Length: 331
Ligand code: ASP
Image (tube, rainbow, N blue to C red; front, side):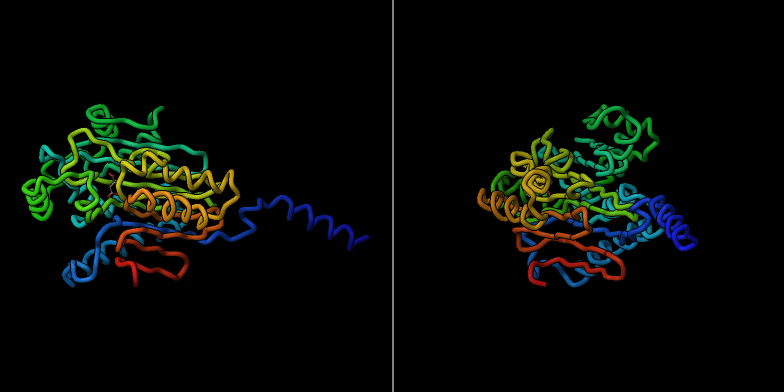
């Protein structure tokens, strides 16, 4: 009787422990700094080292936060805000210029826990657009705010505001002047060389997935143009039952296909694995349309994907004790 009783008590308590606590979830963080024609020899050694350092710093900070039990959504915002402050990426400081020579920034963030999402578009003075997107998610009844309304909201959230010129670097100004002189048409593939949008996808110790993306858009874009990065379902998506995704590339194509949601839907309704869904959407459909870009993704089991159809993509991941930062396609 004693044995039966003990077994019963043990079984009872085991049943009371939630499933999440029983299986240990290893936190994962993936980041990207844009896909494009990034080939060996294009970057100086010191630039390459600085870019890799910045990626590693964003990974280390975001991952340490996850390891300490922090939520995926905050780790995503943290990693992205570090990349926004780095002048080498096309987000925050160092963002590209519009045809009017100004910066208009887009960002979005989503949590797969309950499908909450926040996005801002066309902001000109918010130092860290990803923080404004997170504030839209947390402190507004809306999903997306644009232009001056987004800026007023950011101010009400006491986010740091900066003059538009803060985002300009000499390197970006020169490349804008060159593209102007060439009569740059931002919708042609030949001119679509380097991107630089930043993004992050994370899974925390509770198994929640989050994804976010931040960008200046494309060089010399028309004033008012909005790409895929702030569009939930196109450039960013997260759902705990499928995956989390952040995209980079020619936004016009990513919006038309609804890339991030299409990948999630294939897993949800088509029973595909993350890799099969990426093969279909990125390597199949997008590549078939001659659209350039890439993405990072984590599925519900913590499997990672860092994929692109361009020569390179700034990217990195950290999972447990393994971490890697890469730039070129054939590393
Ligand atoms: N997807 C971004 C956009 O179209 C650009 C990029 O990823 O570089 O705005």
